[in-house]
Image (cartoon, rainbow, N blue to C red; front, side, top):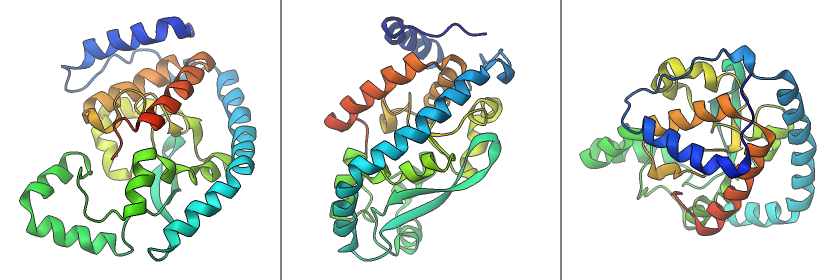
Length: 241
């Protein structure tokens, strides 16, 4: 069984891991079996997720209503949902406040067909740094990660966790290669190691490495460390677009 990381050792260990994996096209240092994840940890995380999501929804409900009314000014729907891959490969609908124009899909199709540079950027990691589909309020929500607050309902339903790998779409499964078994071993999270380690400023191979590293070494102390770092990342809007 893996020894839980201490908070004071986490930063140094993370830097060491990143240095050793930055030049690898596919990190494959995953020797322990998934069965080594302690059942008590999974149960404990679910308890924290359930009561934590209820508490946060109650505390944030006035703010959520304000954000919803602001999103509504640019049209419907207020909530955008997309099919994502969850624990054990189960598919679920992941919720977000809508940050794009209502006809975002058709706009994207036309944009990629007429702009080779943006098409190449999109094919790299399915993101556009200067995405013309994003509304003014959507840009603010994305920069502050507030668009993801509706995922508290996903956490409450048991589809997600407060902390874990970010949920991916089915087209991204192949990019994890042999590391996909680690992604499937846990519930995806609202925040995680990738978010506090550069997020969109990192390449996809590093994201995969971070996800695998988190699952192999997860502990309540690591989750607390990630939660504290998430607050800093949101305040300084690091790596979000």
